[in-house]
Amino acid sequence: MEDVGKNHRVQNPSDVMRKAEEYCALHGLQFTPVRRKVLEILLGSSQVLGAYDILKHLDHAGFKSQPPVAYRALEFLVKHGFVHKVVHLNAFVACDHPDEEHAPMFMICNECDLVVEVDSNPLPRSFASTTKNSGFHVEEAVIEMKGLCTACAGMVVS
Amino acid sequence: MEDVGKNHRVQNPSDVMRKAEEYCALHGLQFTPVRRKVLEILLGSSQVLGAYDILKHLDHAGFKSQPPVAYRALEFLVKHGFVHKVVHLNAFVACDHPDEEHAPMFMICNECDLVVEVDSNPLPRSFASTTKNSGFHVEEAVIEMKGLCTACAGMVVS
DNA sequence: AATTAATTGTTATAACATTACATGTTGACG
DNA sequence: CGTCAACATGTAATGTTATAACAATTAATT
Image 1: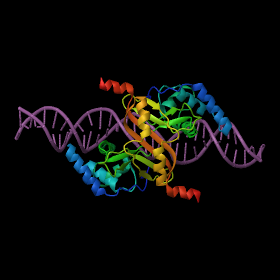
Image 2: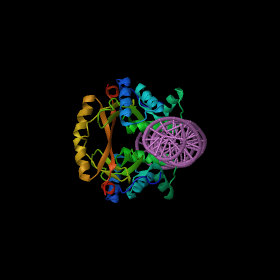
Image 3: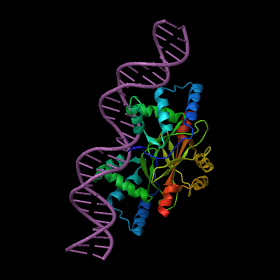
Image 4: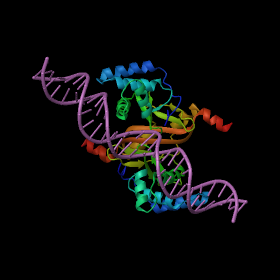
């Protein structure tokens, strides 16, 4: 797969980097060079990126570029909420607002792979009840909607 | 990966097979031997199955067992609603009620990989509004919740 | 029977992800 | 300061999931 999605764009990359630094400092986490670089790569991308796309970027930036390098950094970043994984694309995207509690939701265009994050906070009510009734303890909800973005839908109609 | 999940169990396999037959007849679809067999395999499994698990079953049943064989049959079955894909496990599960319109939701236990389908019909209200506002035309919503099933949650507590 | 569409057979390879173990780095504590 | 433990990285190999491409066959349509 070449670059795997399109047009995702975080508003304030440097702002997010600062938040990540603060968060790590506060929680005694090591915001190491690779981890920092991977977050930078994702923040700088207008597209969601697959692990191997990130690996290429790392390589160009002079980092080691075997798969575990990227997967480890991504694991860390996802774990602490700086990055989300888009499971339908096996791809990753930096989060705009890692400091706010939120259940990420993504809308993915089937035509152009545009990915838009639209959050629901904290979790849609209808879920809470369903899962509670079933006795299931939910730790994480992944909600991804596939369809057509405005642009692509328009092209089909016209 | 060995068999990839646990304890999913469709209530009435033969009932579902009949529905599938009727649906295909009605819509002029070819319910070919492989497609039928793959659905049977999934209906007969107490676990969700990966494509390569299905391939093994096909092999044992005397079918051809190169990857495309399974993926094509699964594509057909998913497309027509007889089977759902659980993206978090890259695995497939037969649907109990392919004849009813529904947005499948899965709860996946992080400990034991128990998968439970809990449907919302048609789509939680909060989504409809979010997506409408964004101009996105949703064709499919994938909702998967990860956490702990009752049994596993109980073990942690005790 | 001829034509076209749909499906299947088959090989090869692409794309995604993890295991395992060695090495290095950091931080806590005597 | 030294040493131990925890954490992080380097590296090779491999495991797992999925698709591309094209040939051969079968089914539906005329």
